[in-house]
Length: 298
Image 1 (cartoon, rainbow, N blue to C red):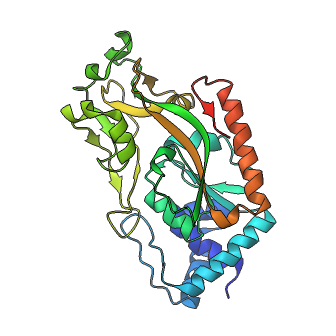
Image 2 (image 1 turned 180 degrees about the vertical axis):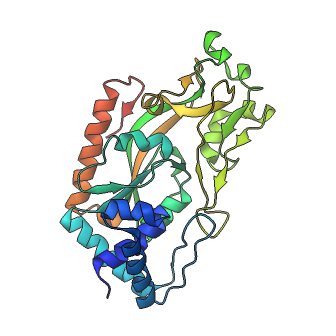
């Protein structure tokens, strides 16, 4: 057995990736985080080594998994220190402050493999993605995907982008314009819905950060565009309404994205889950009053 604070230090380090971020959320100094984490690793005989930008999981340690299950149940029953994260396009739903009792992650990344790994390991308690349309293959015995809202996928550019002043556009009008996008195959269903026009000009791949020991478990962090940059970026009206850098092109891509909450299925019976779902429902309803293309699904 380990103390709650000790396993918190280890698991938040794995989730957030750095002692400073963990210390801010737990209200202590980095040396305390380091000491607690080391003790936890000694108890469970762990040999964790950061791999290039994050910490690996220990899926084959049954005692550690049982301990995490107990600690997750404790967090749920206390309604405190629950952990939630969101992909970049879904992050505005958790701003300016997360739901009461929840601590947020970095809220600035894309990718789904790492969040699902953290959910399965009970390090992360809830995750919101803007690409719920990609989760049809999800293991429904382990996870539950709850649609929150649907909104069109957009292409956006800098306020001085020349295409913003050309009237209604078609995909053919943007096929030769530089475009930043996840690597091909990351979101296959969305790629198929977008069609073939994208292949005429391959996209510029987003810079990737290794977030797990294998290449299949990567997450990416978006870079902020600079002034005068003609590169186009995928966004939604919901995400654009919460930042001032980019403007949506007058272009209908014909693709909808789904804001979706993902939880472990066994957590749905916990009162904390019901409170979270209702909180997010109210946030979506409030956002929809200002965003007509945000269609509530709850």
